[in-house]
Image (cartoon, rainbow, N blue to C red; front, top):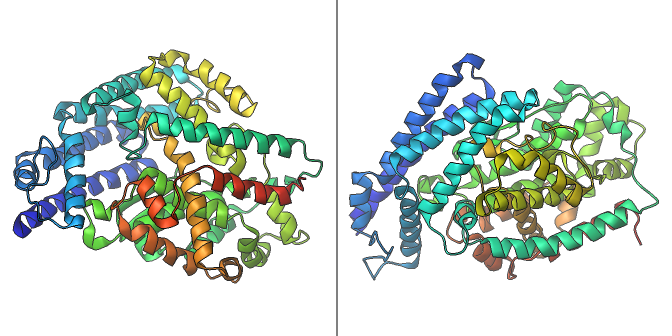
Length: 505
């Protein structure tokens, strides 16, 4: 068995290398690719996608896997396998099953379509032209429905799509969690709206040198633990993180002169993702044990660093003097007032710029819309109207155009339907992880105030990063914190924080 397992792991590594090359080409597409290279880039990505798919589902891989696992049932053939090997083989079989049920022609067509649609989306968004993007999105939704059918499902096709991002989650489970979360968020938001003492953040809309913004962001994330000898930061239209290997993990952001919060918190957010990728064990590269537990667990890392640490008073007690050195406009502003400014709550149009309290509401409306698209047959042509209705229902604001509304996110152009719930789930995971880290280190906030962030990074390395996919998200949270996943720790965190900021009773 040992030799058969080695052959399988070598093939997994080969597959991971092909995927990493594909990711590198996609990173270039989003950062430095010449405008007229788009058509050929689609062909390159389609070819790479087909190559990776063949490695993962072809004869060599099948022959190696079937020596260890029953390909039809997933049953491990060697009953003497230890627990870790059994888990590994289960995950390898599961990934193979999902990949092998997709015809190679489907994979290649989907890759070509999404590569083209991302480029069309980028132009259509700039031009506020949803109809230019609509036919591509219609094809994507149709292919996602077919993808769900290929995967198979027990209750709804949306479950099959969400499983790829959040193993073990179902529409029913997420709906219940989000219902409880929504109730708590709406109550807090109403209290904040009725507060008689609201922070004034107009100062943050003044001119902030973009070069200094960029430099300060990089200075901070390196101190948090983002290793620049294994990473870099570049500009893109939509901030993202790409990890090719733990030794090469890259982030991007965008910078606005009159909105200093945007670039800074995007940088910290993406660095949270990147530190997770850099913390994955390189000796397991290619295997499930060298991969993130889920997209929601990944998001927990970025939301934890961006908001629960990066927007905390303890964090700014350390970094604010340096910020004032770079931006004289802040010289007469106290750190406590700055802290209130960066935590202003205001229902807004753009998800990635949303505050902590309203952010999850943005996700919930996308979750509702995706369910309607996949489960209920909602027509893509009706999306702008449905989007605006949901924005009014959830946040009380209506986008003035499709650029600020239905076309603001890149995900659908990428074919990533079923991804959005992971963002809000990430908030829930993060709150429970932070609670446990503080329990394990009672002097946690004093250490953060002193500018020592390894206390958290090391805790996350031990309890989350190095575990890879050894546990599904719900099991991981339970094993690390001793508690089932619940919205209550996150709601408690928000209520305690914003009670002080907005001086609520």
